[in-house]
Amino acid sequence: MKFVIQRDKLAGSVQDVMKAVSSRTTIPILTGIKMVASEEGVTLTGSDSDISIESFIPAEEDGKENVEVITPGSIVLQARFFSEIVKKLPMDAVEITVENHLNAVIRSGKAEFNLNGLDAEEYPQLPQIEENNVFRIPTDLLKTMIRQTVFAVSASETRPILTGVNWRLENGELICVATDSHRLGMRKAPVESDAASAHNVVIPGKSLNELNKLLDDSNELVDIVVTENQVLFKTRNLLFFSRLLDGNYPDTSRLIPNESKTVINIATRDFLQAIDRASLLAREGRNNVVKFSTLPGGMVEISSNSPEIGKVLEEVQTQSTEGEELKISFSAKYVMDALKAVEGTEITVSFTGAMRPFVITIPEDDSILQLILPVRTY
Image (cartoon, rainbow, N blue to C red; front, side):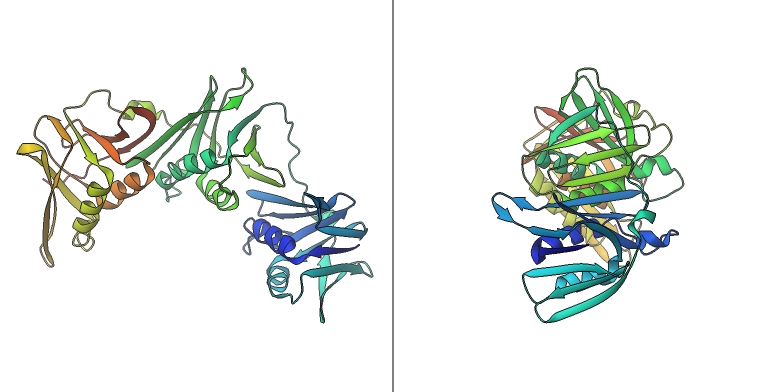
Protein backbone atom coordinates (compact mmCIF):
# COMPACT_ATOMS: atom_id res chain seq x y z
CA MET A 1 0.00 0.00 0.00
CA LYS A 2 1.29 3.45 -0.86
CA PHE A 3 -0.39 6.84 -1.05
CA VAL A 4 0.28 10.56 -0.64
CA ILE A 5 -2.33 12.59 1.24
CA GLN A 6 -2.95 16.16 2.42
CA ARG A 7 -2.02 16.35 6.11
CA ASP A 8 -5.02 18.48 7.16
CA LYS A 9 -7.50 16.11 5.51
CA LEU A 10 -5.82 13.13 7.18
CA ALA A 11 -5.69 14.85 10.58
CA GLY A 12 -9.38 15.80 10.39
CA SER A 13 -10.43 12.24 9.58
CA VAL A 14 -8.18 10.74 12.24
CA GLN A 15 -9.67 13.12 14.82
CA ASP A 16 -13.20 12.09 13.78
CA VAL A 17 -12.64 8.34 14.00
CA MET A 18 -10.66 8.67 17.26
CA LYS A 19 -13.96 9.57 18.95
CA ALA A 20 -14.95 5.91 18.64
CA VAL A 21 -11.63 4.38 19.70
CA SER A 22 -11.41 3.29 23.34
CA SER A 23 -8.21 2.40 25.16
CA ARG A 24 -10.27 0.16 27.49
CA THR A 25 -11.43 -2.43 24.99
CA THR A 26 -11.20 -6.20 25.45
CA ILE A 27 -10.48 -6.61 21.71
CA PRO A 28 -6.86 -5.41 21.19
CA ILE A 29 -7.26 -4.61 17.47
CA LEU A 30 -9.96 -2.03 18.34
CA THR A 31 -7.30 0.19 19.93
CA GLY A 32 -6.21 0.80 16.34
CA ILE A 33 -7.48 2.77 13.34
CA LYS A 34 -8.16 0.79 10.18
CA MET A 35 -6.97 2.47 7.01
CA VAL A 36 -7.95 1.32 3.52
CA ALA A 37 -6.61 2.93 0.34
CA SER A 38 -8.44 2.38 -2.94
CA GLU A 39 -8.70 4.20 -6.26
CA GLU A 40 -11.63 6.26 -4.92
CA GLY A 41 -9.68 7.51 -1.87
CA VAL A 42 -8.79 6.58 1.70
CA THR A 43 -11.23 5.26 4.32
CA LEU A 44 -10.44 5.40 8.06
CA THR A 45 -12.43 3.43 10.65
CA GLY A 46 -12.49 3.54 14.44
CA SER A 47 -14.73 1.45 16.71
CA ASP A 48 -15.27 0.41 20.32
CA SER A 49 -18.03 -2.05 19.31
CA ASP A 50 -20.72 0.31 20.72
CA ILE A 51 -19.91 3.13 18.30
CA SER A 52 -18.18 2.81 14.93
CA ILE A 53 -17.13 5.79 12.81
CA GLU A 54 -16.01 5.59 9.22
CA SER A 55 -14.52 8.66 7.55
CA PHE A 56 -13.84 8.78 3.82
CA ILE A 57 -11.32 11.09 2.16
CA PRO A 58 -12.12 11.15 -1.58
CA ALA A 59 -9.17 11.19 -3.96
CA GLU A 60 -10.60 14.33 -5.51
CA GLU A 61 -13.19 16.75 -4.17
CA ASP A 62 -14.44 20.06 -5.60
CA GLY A 63 -11.68 19.92 -8.22
CA LYS A 64 -8.89 19.59 -5.61
CA GLU A 65 -6.72 16.51 -5.20
CA ASN A 66 -6.67 15.21 -1.60
CA VAL A 67 -5.06 11.82 -2.10
CA GLU A 68 -2.92 10.16 -4.71
CA VAL A 69 -3.18 6.38 -4.28
CA ILE A 70 -0.20 4.68 -5.85
CA THR A 71 -0.81 1.12 -4.57
CA PRO A 72 -4.14 0.14 -2.93
CA GLY A 73 -4.06 -1.78 0.35
CA SER A 74 -5.02 -1.73 4.02
CA ILE A 75 -3.57 -1.78 7.55
CA VAL A 76 -4.53 -1.15 11.18
CA LEU A 77 -2.29 1.29 13.10
CA GLN A 78 -2.16 2.02 16.86
CA ALA A 79 -4.62 4.90 17.17
CA ARG A 80 -2.93 6.75 20.02
CA PHE A 81 0.49 6.98 18.34
CA PHE A 82 -0.80 7.45 14.81
CA SER A 83 -3.06 10.37 15.81
CA GLU A 84 -0.23 12.11 17.69
CA ILE A 85 2.18 11.61 14.77
CA VAL A 86 -0.25 12.99 12.18
CA LYS A 87 -0.91 16.13 14.28
CA LYS A 88 2.81 16.93 14.48
CA LEU A 89 4.00 16.21 10.94
CA PRO A 90 6.03 19.11 9.49
CA MET A 91 4.77 19.37 5.89
CA ASP A 92 1.38 19.52 4.11
CA ALA A 93 2.03 16.33 2.12
CA VAL A 94 2.21 12.98 3.91
CA GLU A 95 3.35 9.76 2.28
CA ILE A 96 2.24 6.49 3.86
CA THR A 97 3.75 3.21 2.67
CA VAL A 98 3.25 -0.29 4.03
CA GLU A 99 6.31 -2.43 3.47
CA ASN A 100 7.17 -6.08 4.21
CA HIS A 101 3.64 -6.94 5.19
CA LEU A 102 2.76 -4.85 8.25
CA ASN A 103 5.36 -2.16 8.74
CA ALA A 104 4.01 1.32 7.96
CA VAL A 105 6.36 4.14 7.04
CA ILE A 106 4.99 7.67 7.45
CA ARG A 107 7.03 10.40 5.77
CA SER A 108 6.51 14.14 5.74
CA GLY A 109 9.30 16.54 4.82
CA LYS A 110 12.44 15.25 6.53
CA ALA A 111 10.51 13.35 9.23
CA GLU A 112 10.06 9.60 8.96
CA PHE A 113 8.19 7.32 11.35
CA ASN A 114 8.01 3.53 11.28
CA LEU A 115 4.93 2.03 12.95
CA ASN A 116 4.13 -1.64 13.43
CA GLY A 117 0.66 -2.38 12.14
CA LEU A 118 -1.89 -5.18 12.34
CA ASP A 119 -3.67 -7.07 9.60
CA ALA A 120 -6.81 -5.18 8.49
CA GLU A 121 -8.51 -8.51 7.67
CA GLU A 122 -8.74 -9.18 11.42
CA TYR A 123 -10.55 -5.92 12.10
CA PRO A 124 -14.27 -6.54 12.88
CA GLN A 125 -16.55 -5.80 9.93
CA LEU A 126 -18.89 -2.85 10.30
CA PRO A 127 -22.57 -3.82 10.39
CA GLN A 128 -24.08 -4.21 6.93
CA ILE A 129 -27.23 -2.13 6.97
CA GLU A 130 -30.03 -2.46 4.45
CA GLU A 131 -30.88 1.07 3.46
CA ASN A 132 -34.53 0.69 2.65
CA ASN A 133 -35.95 2.50 5.66
CA VAL A 134 -34.22 5.89 5.52
CA PHE A 135 -35.39 9.15 7.00
CA ARG A 136 -33.62 12.49 6.56
CA ILE A 137 -33.11 15.52 8.74
CA PRO A 138 -31.02 18.70 8.29
CA THR A 139 -27.74 18.57 10.22
CA ASP A 140 -28.37 21.73 12.24
CA LEU A 141 -31.84 20.55 13.30
CA LEU A 142 -30.46 17.14 14.30
CA LYS A 143 -27.78 18.82 16.43
CA THR A 144 -30.40 21.02 18.10
CA MET A 145 -32.70 18.07 18.83
CA ILE A 146 -29.84 16.14 20.41
CA ARG A 147 -28.74 19.14 22.48
CA GLN A 148 -32.27 19.80 23.74
CA THR A 149 -32.78 16.25 25.04
CA VAL A 150 -29.53 14.39 25.67
CA PHE A 151 -28.62 16.29 28.86
CA ALA A 152 -31.65 14.74 30.58
CA VAL A 153 -30.54 11.10 30.18
CA SER A 154 -29.73 9.18 33.35
CA ALA A 155 -26.10 8.99 34.44
CA SER A 156 -26.84 5.89 36.52
CA GLU A 157 -26.68 2.37 35.10
CA THR A 158 -29.37 1.03 37.47
CA ARG A 159 -31.93 1.43 34.68
CA PRO A 160 -29.80 1.19 31.53
CA ILE A 161 -32.70 2.11 29.21
CA LEU A 162 -32.79 5.62 30.76
CA THR A 163 -29.17 6.27 29.73
CA GLY A 164 -30.49 6.63 26.18
CA VAL A 165 -32.80 8.96 24.26
CA ASN A 166 -36.06 7.50 22.96
CA TRP A 167 -36.59 8.28 19.25
CA ARG A 168 -40.07 7.70 17.89
CA LEU A 169 -40.83 8.26 14.24
CA GLU A 170 -44.50 8.24 13.29
CA ASN A 171 -46.46 9.99 10.54
CA GLY A 172 -43.39 11.88 9.33
CA GLU A 173 -42.66 13.35 12.78
CA LEU A 174 -39.63 12.53 14.93
CA ILE A 175 -40.16 12.75 18.70
CA CYS A 176 -37.07 12.61 20.94
CA VAL A 177 -37.51 12.10 24.69
CA ALA A 178 -34.93 11.73 27.47
CA THR A 179 -35.56 11.36 31.19
CA ASP A 180 -33.61 10.39 34.31
CA SER A 181 -36.90 10.16 36.26
CA HIS A 182 -36.31 13.58 37.92
CA ARG A 183 -36.61 15.59 34.72
CA LEU A 184 -37.56 15.12 31.09
CA GLY A 185 -36.60 16.79 27.83
CA MET A 186 -38.74 16.41 24.72
CA ARG A 187 -38.33 17.79 21.21
CA LYS A 188 -40.28 16.99 18.06
CA ALA A 189 -39.85 17.97 14.42
CA PRO A 190 -41.11 16.92 11.01
CA VAL A 191 -38.64 14.80 8.99
CA GLU A 192 -38.45 13.52 5.43
CA SER A 193 -39.34 9.84 5.48
CA ASP A 194 -41.04 7.09 3.55
CA ALA A 195 -44.70 7.36 4.43
CA ALA A 196 -44.71 3.85 5.87
CA SER A 197 -41.68 4.11 8.13
CA ALA A 198 -42.25 4.05 11.87
CA HIS A 199 -39.59 3.44 14.51
CA ASN A 200 -39.39 3.35 18.27
CA VAL A 201 -35.77 2.96 19.42
CA VAL A 202 -33.47 4.06 22.23
CA ILE A 203 -30.07 5.50 21.25
CA PRO A 204 -27.36 5.70 23.97
CA GLY A 205 -26.83 9.27 25.17
CA LYS A 206 -23.07 8.75 24.89
CA SER A 207 -23.40 7.95 21.16
CA LEU A 208 -25.51 11.05 20.51
CA ASN A 209 -23.01 13.27 22.34
CA GLU A 210 -20.18 11.94 20.17
CA LEU A 211 -22.26 12.32 17.01
CA ASN A 212 -23.00 15.93 17.93
CA LYS A 213 -19.29 16.71 18.18
CA LEU A 214 -18.72 15.31 14.67
CA LEU A 215 -21.49 17.13 12.83
CA ASP A 216 -20.94 20.62 11.47
CA ASP A 217 -23.62 23.31 11.57
CA SER A 218 -24.91 23.02 8.02
CA ASN A 219 -28.36 22.43 6.63
CA GLU A 220 -27.18 19.45 4.56
CA LEU A 221 -29.38 16.42 5.12
CA VAL A 222 -28.23 13.54 7.30
CA ASP A 223 -29.57 10.12 6.28
CA ILE A 224 -30.66 8.02 9.25
CA VAL A 225 -31.18 4.27 8.92
CA VAL A 226 -32.58 2.20 11.80
CA THR A 227 -32.30 -1.58 12.07
CA GLU A 228 -33.14 -3.98 14.87
CA ASN A 229 -30.05 -3.26 16.96
CA GLN A 230 -28.14 -0.50 15.15
CA VAL A 231 -28.67 3.03 13.92
CA LEU A 232 -26.60 4.58 11.13
CA PHE A 233 -26.15 8.33 10.57
CA LYS A 234 -24.76 9.09 7.15
CA THR A 235 -23.38 12.39 5.86
CA ARG A 236 -21.40 13.05 2.72
CA ASN A 237 -18.08 11.51 3.84
CA LEU A 238 -18.94 10.09 7.25
CA LEU A 239 -20.73 7.01 8.54
CA PHE A 240 -21.59 6.88 12.25
CA PHE A 241 -22.95 3.58 13.61
CA SER A 242 -24.28 3.13 17.12
CA ARG A 243 -25.80 0.13 18.83
CA LEU A 244 -29.31 0.60 20.22
CA LEU A 245 -30.29 -0.07 23.83
CA ASP A 246 -32.39 -3.17 24.51
CA GLY A 247 -35.69 -2.90 26.30
CA ASN A 248 -38.85 -0.84 26.30
CA TYR A 249 -38.67 2.84 27.08
CA PRO A 250 -41.23 3.86 29.73
CA ASP A 251 -44.36 5.64 28.52
CA THR A 252 -43.47 9.22 29.44
CA SER A 253 -46.64 10.81 28.07
CA ARG A 254 -48.36 9.99 31.38
CA LEU A 255 -45.88 12.20 33.25
CA ILE A 256 -46.84 15.34 31.37
CA PRO A 257 -49.70 17.15 33.15
CA ASN A 258 -52.58 18.24 30.91
CA GLU A 259 -53.83 20.96 33.26
CA SER A 260 -52.14 23.69 35.26
CA LYS A 261 -53.05 25.76 38.31
CA THR A 262 -50.43 28.50 38.00
CA VAL A 263 -48.92 29.77 34.74
CA ILE A 264 -46.19 32.39 34.36
CA ASN A 265 -44.67 33.93 31.25
CA ILE A 266 -41.20 35.27 31.90
CA ALA A 267 -38.07 36.36 30.01
CA THR A 268 -35.80 33.30 29.74
CA ARG A 269 -32.62 35.23 30.45
CA ASP A 270 -33.93 37.04 33.55
CA PHE A 271 -35.23 33.78 35.01
CA LEU A 272 -32.03 31.86 34.23
CA GLN A 273 -29.74 34.52 35.70
CA ALA A 274 -31.81 34.88 38.89
CA ILE A 275 -31.72 31.11 39.45
CA ASP A 276 -28.00 31.09 38.72
CA ARG A 277 -27.43 33.76 41.39
CA ALA A 278 -29.65 31.98 43.92
CA SER A 279 -27.78 28.73 43.31
CA LEU A 280 -24.48 30.35 44.38
CA LEU A 281 -25.50 29.88 48.01
CA ALA A 282 -27.50 26.70 47.41
CA ARG A 283 -24.60 24.59 46.18
CA GLU A 284 -23.27 23.64 49.59
CA GLY A 285 -26.61 22.69 51.04
CA ARG A 286 -29.22 20.16 50.04
CA ASN A 287 -28.50 19.30 46.48
CA ASN A 288 -28.56 22.81 45.05
CA VAL A 289 -32.20 23.56 45.93
CA VAL A 290 -33.78 26.94 45.13
CA LYS A 291 -37.18 28.15 46.34
CA PHE A 292 -39.66 29.89 44.08
CA SER A 293 -42.84 31.70 45.07
CA THR A 294 -45.37 33.95 43.35
CA LEU A 295 -45.96 37.45 44.72
CA PRO A 296 -48.70 40.00 44.01
CA GLY A 297 -48.27 42.32 41.02
CA GLY A 298 -46.85 39.73 38.64
CA MET A 299 -43.61 39.35 40.58
CA VAL A 300 -41.95 36.07 41.55
CA GLU A 301 -39.40 35.53 44.30
CA ILE A 302 -36.40 33.25 43.88
CA SER A 303 -34.41 32.48 47.02
CA SER A 304 -32.10 30.04 48.70
CA ASN A 305 -30.90 29.65 52.23
CA SER A 306 -27.90 27.74 53.58
CA PRO A 307 -27.76 28.16 57.37
CA GLU A 308 -23.95 27.89 57.44
CA ILE A 309 -23.33 30.35 54.58
CA GLY A 310 -26.17 32.80 54.29
CA LYS A 311 -29.19 33.47 52.13
CA VAL A 312 -30.11 35.16 48.86
CA LEU A 313 -33.43 36.55 47.74
CA GLU A 314 -34.36 38.15 44.44
CA GLU A 315 -37.59 39.37 42.87
CA VAL A 316 -38.17 39.07 39.13
CA GLN A 317 -40.94 40.69 37.10
CA THR A 318 -42.90 38.27 34.90
CA GLN A 319 -44.68 39.18 31.65
CA SER A 320 -47.82 37.62 33.11
CA THR A 321 -48.91 35.45 36.04
CA GLU A 322 -52.21 33.60 36.16
CA GLY A 323 -53.83 31.23 38.62
CA GLU A 324 -53.21 30.24 42.21
CA GLU A 325 -50.44 31.46 44.52
CA LEU A 326 -47.57 29.00 44.64
CA LYS A 327 -44.51 28.07 46.67
CA ILE A 328 -42.29 25.37 45.20
CA SER A 329 -38.67 24.19 45.49
CA PHE A 330 -36.55 22.71 42.73
CA SER A 331 -33.02 21.79 41.74
CA ALA A 332 -31.34 24.90 40.33
CA LYS A 333 -29.16 22.77 38.07
CA TYR A 334 -32.12 20.97 36.49
CA VAL A 335 -34.00 24.19 35.75
CA MET A 336 -30.88 25.93 34.42
CA ASP A 337 -30.12 22.96 32.11
CA ALA A 338 -33.70 23.09 30.83
CA LEU A 339 -33.63 26.86 30.27
CA LYS A 340 -30.35 26.65 28.34
CA ALA A 341 -31.87 23.96 26.10
CA VAL A 342 -34.99 25.99 25.27
CA GLU A 343 -34.32 28.37 22.40
CA GLY A 344 -36.65 31.27 23.09
CA THR A 345 -36.41 34.72 24.63
CA GLU A 346 -39.61 34.10 26.56
CA ILE A 347 -40.88 30.95 28.25
CA THR A 348 -44.09 29.69 29.80
CA VAL A 349 -43.82 27.77 33.06
CA SER A 350 -46.92 25.79 34.01
CA PHE A 351 -47.29 24.48 37.56
CA THR A 352 -49.89 22.06 38.92
CA GLY A 353 -49.10 22.48 42.60
CA ALA A 354 -46.06 22.39 44.90
CA MET A 355 -45.48 18.63 44.70
CA ARG A 356 -46.35 17.96 41.06
CA PRO A 357 -44.02 18.13 38.04
CA PHE A 358 -43.93 21.50 36.26
CA VAL A 359 -43.44 22.16 32.57
CA ILE A 360 -41.35 24.74 30.68
CA THR A 361 -42.41 25.49 27.10
CA ILE A 362 -42.15 28.30 24.54
CA PRO A 363 -45.35 30.32 24.01
CA GLU A 364 -47.24 29.27 20.84
CA ASP A 365 -44.81 26.40 20.17
CA ASP A 366 -45.40 22.78 21.13
CA SER A 367 -42.25 21.36 19.52
CA ILE A 368 -40.17 21.57 22.70
CA LEU A 369 -41.01 20.75 26.31
CA GLN A 370 -38.96 20.43 29.49
CA LEU A 371 -40.47 18.83 32.57
CA ILE A 372 -38.98 18.95 36.10
CA LEU A 373 -39.98 17.28 39.36
CA PRO A 374 -39.93 19.59 42.37
CA VAL A 375 -37.99 18.92 45.58
CA ARG A 376 -39.83 18.44 48.88
CA THR A 377 -38.51 21.04 51.32
CA TYR A 378 -41.52 22.58 53.02
